[in-house]
Image (cartoon, rainbow, N blue to C red; front, side, top):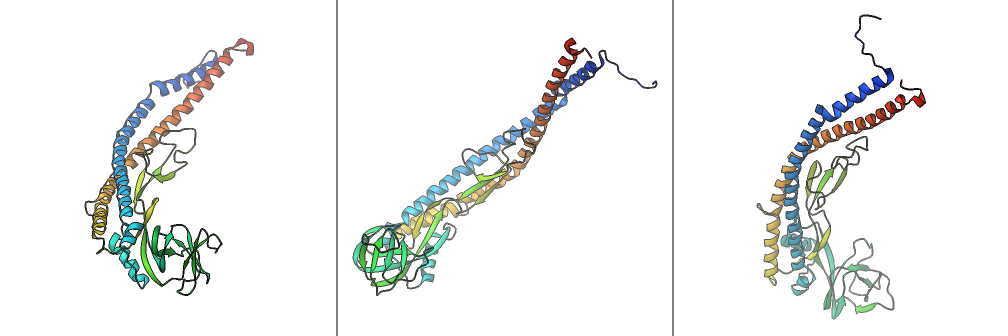
Length: 339
């Protein structure tokens, strides 16, 4: 056939495969692919560093918030309540008192405890159970020795209410046993407010096959994870989200008489303001989160480019290795070569 410029090889099969091998080597080792890979790798690193640093600042503030909340739990715990007891005739007033002292922005949840007052002192340990002969049972939520007041919550136990008629016991279960301690008949039953305090947290959406690059999977986005920001994943991922009061449990606090213990009340207010105030720690974390949420998507886009180019290079390397093997065999006279 004439009219076409056709390159011929001698031997033909070896020549064709060798030409393909040379082309791939040029593309992989000398061509623009590696230049582009290098540029995207550099761009990724350029954005990874500030992402890591800003995440680090946010994590520092997050840890400080945890420390501040631990201080609040220490100030509003069992001893403070028993030292300045504040009991209410209705649950609404008890709830209001808790929110007034600690603020809704600090508390994860607010509850109302039954406050049973007895005629003589007893030892009450949080986690044990108070039971009554009428079948009422509840968990003790505050620890104190030598006191007449037991704070109990029946949440999740689903038993009947206590009364001022039947005898009560304290034990390790809701079943009255011979080993439980008799504390007597309640003199009065009121309400006490309490709140649970949890950590703040930042979640990060990450792609483990992009950071670092793993081309053994077919999809770089495979295995997307959402985890809490910590020392091991600063800078990674595509987006951060800041959640208040949804992390690990720190402790329980109680409403107390703020006139009788004005010092604790003032300290709690001041510490809470360090967290939630206009220039507080949460404001800083919000600023950090907004910033990395701008940077990280660009970082991830460069990571995707690095993954794609690395994937092409890996496949080219595999193809070249196969071509070398094939060419060697086709050149071997033992197998009828060269072809």
